[in-house]
Image (cartoon, rainbow, N blue to C red; front, side):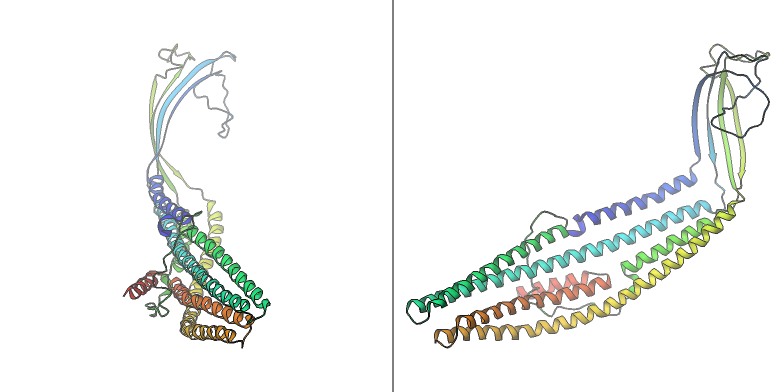
Length: 437
């Protein structure tokens, strides 16, 4: 459910799909010619003088000769046309830009896989926490029942004059305390199940859980005891993908210091109501709004911003350090995974040993509680001693549940470090089958 409904995972999945589509977008940007269709209708004066200026949007171009005398009456001018601007030859820059888009997609895909692992582990951990809280509720309910039964015995003893009246009050106090523990256990259980609902993408819902065979099976199959290639962990793959994006940026810079060949071609129509002394404007009354004089153009433009070498070299020095930092980040990821693997395996061994020893503690505590109640009925023990024995029994049972689930938490940690939850899920499934036999 977490894999299909958790919003953060769905967000990363959508971003990964966007990065994938960005590759096609980059190909379109690189290989499809620039194009423009334009139509203009302008009223302006046409006084001219010979001069040289740099191009500016403030000073529009006024081609053609001007009138013989300066005049401020307006003429109408019109123009329409299109142009194509295509640069297929760029000495590998197109391919480098597309390669950078592909590298960014790989980084996005690696980030998605890491998020998927994190979301799955968090959901499994929330489930195990909820399972512990559920077991604590069961223990608290059993504790309330024991104190309730014991309170009945104490009241009978007091009513028969065999025990002091204070014992009845003390037994009632212990029963009330056990009920308070049950209230707190139920609260923690509800909070844990609400947290589980959030972890599986159902925030606001208090979900029900099925323990399967996790509580009973304290020695699950550990199928992840073989050597692991930590460089293939999603965290390492993300670091690798980051290195690839840095290398792709360097390749783009390598291909930038080349001339850019641009093929241009177009067709246009011009019109004006301004008449030269040659009278060469057809239909002068309407051509200010509907251009009538045709022209076509085709050409080759070579652009070479030769001073860009200064910027490119400066950017390369930055990218070289970014590549170095990304490589160190990859080394750090691998080392942290190796450290976590050692710690997770040590925790798993300790958790299994602790779970094996807990039944001994629970059995001893159960025997002590029964003996304390028997001694009280024989007048050899106090209510406080019985209460203490029952509390130790309740604590032991809680610790047993925590220890049993702790084995699975440790196994989950190992699976997380190895980057693969399937062995953990298979062990849980096997445990459930073993319980049903």
